[in-house]
Amino acid sequence: MSRPLLSIIVIVYDMPRQALNTLISLSPGYQQGVLADDYEVIVVENRSQRNMDVEAIAALPGNFRYFLRDEPGVSPAAAINFAFAQAQGLFIGLMIDGARMVTPGVVQYALMARRITSEAMAVVPGYHLGEHEQQFHLSRGYSQEHEQRLLEGIDWQRNGYRLFEISCLSGANPNGIFHPFMECNCLFLDSEVFRDIGQADERFDLPGGGALNLYLYRKAAMHPRTRSFMLAGEGSFHQLHGGVTTSEVAQRETILNRQREQLTELLGESFRSPTVEPILLGKIPGSALRYLKHSVERGMHRVQRCAERNEDMYADERSKERSRELALDMT
Image (cartoon, rainbow, N blue to C red; front, top):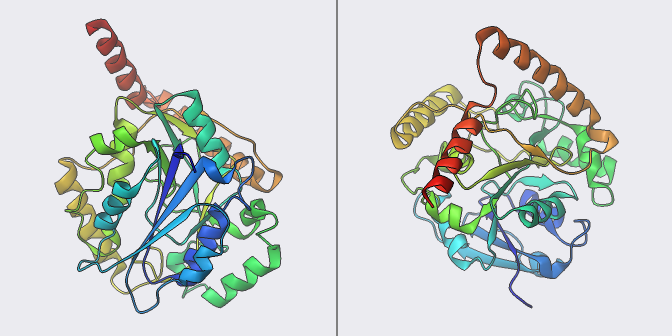
């Protein structure tokens, strides 16, 4: 096998069924318009009482490399950096939460963005399986068993775009693709940019990494050598697994407050979503049109609000453009 252009990093902890679904959704038998040699998937599992079935991973088509680690902490940051050290690709995909299945065009369009420009940062919108966000799963009577029945009912391995039929928007980005994103749980960027932003900061030592995902997305989006590509018709879909912030847990607000405090401390300022203007890439399947409609409606409200306040909708994008122009003038 020649060196792949893309290395996708998937971090797993205590979610064997959900993680296997994720890996199936990343396999060349499911992904459309790509060959097995186009990319590799690096799976790093932090040991738990329920580890993945190694034989099931080995049976998947494609280039999967699996590593089982003994992690003394409770954060995935060290596992991300370990995986990055193994990566062969010039382009890196980050999936910090291994419980996120993706639609069949993700790899194809991420690679397409990279071929357009080496500065590509490809962003996949996030969703939760089920009618409501999963942090309300107990109140709404949503369970892993119910989720399995939903997945079986759409035969997702044959048509992954049907995942849009049994999902809702993630609470991190409830307004859709024409609003600034807080985070991205399936993000692609140049390997040198990932090095430049310091990789995964291991000071994010809270369970699940705390707000590491928000930090990485903001750092990547604000980097002067990234151009945002929104894969508008694709999605990453979170499966219920008892996650720190994606399930109905006791003292959830206390946990979120501690995460926000650490994020502010390590970022050096209060967090805000980066206002970068994405290039829309890919097709919009019929099953996703309701989300596009919602995005347009919310986007029009944002246009009106910004006009009333005399605000630039994409101020950070303009700042990056000025930085690029200045850099060109200095060469």
